[in-house]
Amino acid sequence: MDRKLLGLLAGDATLSYKEMGEQLHLSAPAVHERVKKLKKSGAIAGTVARLDGTAVGRPLCAFIHMDTEGWGKSPELLSIQEDSRIEEIHAVAGDTCVILKVRCESTKALEDILHRLYQVPGMIRTQSYIVLNTYLERGPGV
Amino acid sequence: MDRKLLGLLAGDATLSYKEMGEQLHLSAPAVHERVKKLKKSGAIAGTVARLDGTAVGRPLCAFIHMDTEGWGKSPELLSIQEDSRIEEIHAVAGDTCVILKVRCESTKALEDILHRLYQVPGMIRTQSYIVLNTYLERGPGV
DNA sequence: ATGATCCGCCGAACACCATTCGGCATAAAG
DNA sequence: CTTTATGCCGAATGGTGTTCGGCGGATCAT
Image (cartoon, rainbow over all chains, first blue to last red; front, side):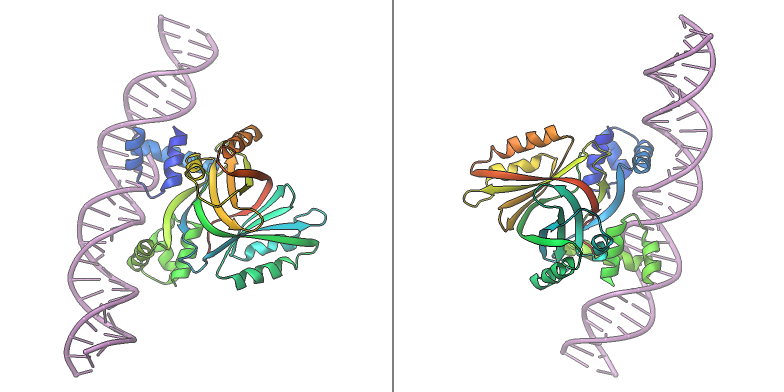
């Protein structure tokens, strides 16, 4: 039941409690209580507006693999998250150390990002994958 | 001005128009009009709840690189997006063809996903990157 | 089996917010 | 100067979020 509710909210968080209640065969206050609990438990991390990268002037999306010597979330690496063009930073297992997802205004801006990445001490190399087309992009589902 | 507003909404879409208006030195109806235009123009693609993967029983996140022969968004490839564990599908330029972002319940489930991917005709190989830790994960920003 | 406790749900009520409307100011166009 | 369009504001209203009290079913101990 909670899973259905999470599925609804993950798809469109502007639904009213009444509308969700109809789909779940519940009353509005019942839905409200469940949502409140889900927020408190952390299952719902937040409610945000999904922006269109192109419409906000950032048509270029790319994944960047970073190879570093040693292992450590250096302050320099974590500080790059202040750059709003960086959307994701993951430490991964595989033939690279860190995967970044970035969204920027141009290839020139991407070069600027790469410049900054090479300021991080211990950086060995990067490998970039420019996305040509996005077929699917959504958050965690049910 | 619209950029500030988008920044606010991308961070927390539960803010009331009055609250946003105070931060932007605008009245509530003025904010409302701007938001309505931004939605109509497509800059705001939607308003959704951000779910916590771990809390919804999907603690394992991974990126999968797919190499295929030829080039084509085959119906088989696009049909895998019905699997809610698949969060993103991007065609990319680089030393692979397609990058997937998946979030699932276990390594066993990841193997199941890989099995399905190999049903796609023309699939040559995959390479998986299991994320060990996520330092940052957000949508398109200002 | 009986009683107590807890949990989740409902209906009603209230306060707040989203939304609309009319009007005003500014700026660009005729 | 007149006209038009745009963006904003204040007030009003319809709808929604939110709270409250009470009800019914489930669980457990006596």
